[in-house]
Amino acid sequence: MAKAVRTRPRIVVAISGASGAVYGIEALRLLRELGTHETHLVVSPAGARTIAEETDVPLREVEALADYRHNFRDIGAPLASGAFKVEGMLIAPCSARTLGAIAVSLGDNLIVRAADVCLKERRRLVLMLRETPLHLGHIELMAKVTRYGAIVMPPVPAFYTHPQTIGDLVTQTAARALDILGVEVGALKRWPTDIAAVSAAPIETDDGE
Image 1 (cartoon, helix red, strand yellow):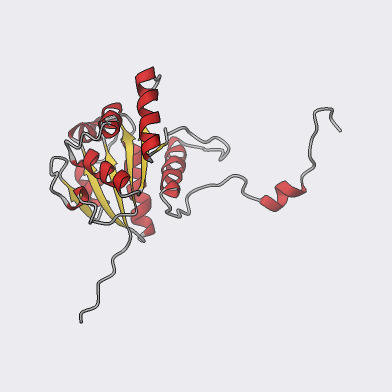
Image 2 (cartoon, rainbow, N blue to C red):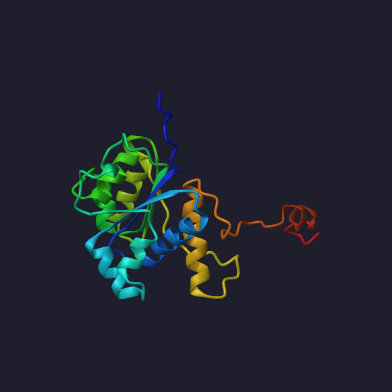
């Protein structure tokens, strides 16, 4: 009997049409550098335009960061089936349109269908929603997908890491999103960094004693 071939755990990264394509690109770069996961990429047409508008990275170079690239319109791709096992999916950035489509299980493109598969198979789905300010419709959609099991993670910058560049902020946020998916990334700076030092520090009270 032939032995089953083991593959690396699979992570899906999708880039939709919201501002912030750099987050998806950086997540792909970190995964490529790590080398422990098989990566599958889906870029929407609006996502491709955002990449061109906001970055100097050609789309072909973004696609080259992933092990496999899938057509946005191919709802018959492996990612559209629950039988194709993945560890989780990151949509970075996630547009309000994509959020809404996931909330109603629209499934009219591969990003939404793959996200819906993650939810129905109880796999991790992280949505890096990039929209501000928010109206009640956005908030209700976030509440809805959260009830379904998704994790909504707006790309809020972390300043406790003392970032020196915009790139530092992007890397920390992308690494944090991957961490939520269960991927250990060395670039992630955690808080607190030194538990022993924090434990040894004096505790301040309201009265100053």
